[in-house]
Length: 146
Image 1: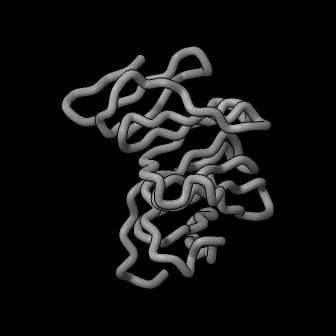
Image 2: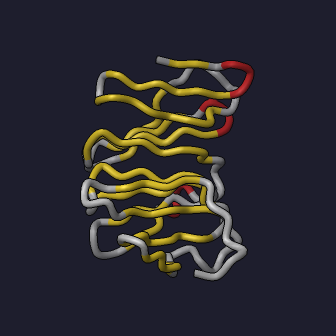
């Protein structure tokens, strides 16, 4: 792979393959091979900052574009483009979370997206968890939501 690509985040699936993101780059990792992938928002000036997968066929990317991979095709979710989304996490295909600036938290239940009330207006930068009922969100000024 060409030098000059910098990476912000990476996800590895159960088979040891995965994805990495940084800048406007989306990279497929299979064994010791890395391939730059042209995604639906590649021709826009995007910043992809986070990647997480519930499985090898359910992978999400967050940043100035939000992308979803179903195991075959990447699709863009235009409703989240340039909306300040910072991070993504999921416990299953019906439990996907996005966090971002101005305290935004969005949840996908496998059918529809809804906005959750975080109770804060500071930027939320990270989300992680160990399951659907055990999720942590971190943000500016020491914000920690559990």
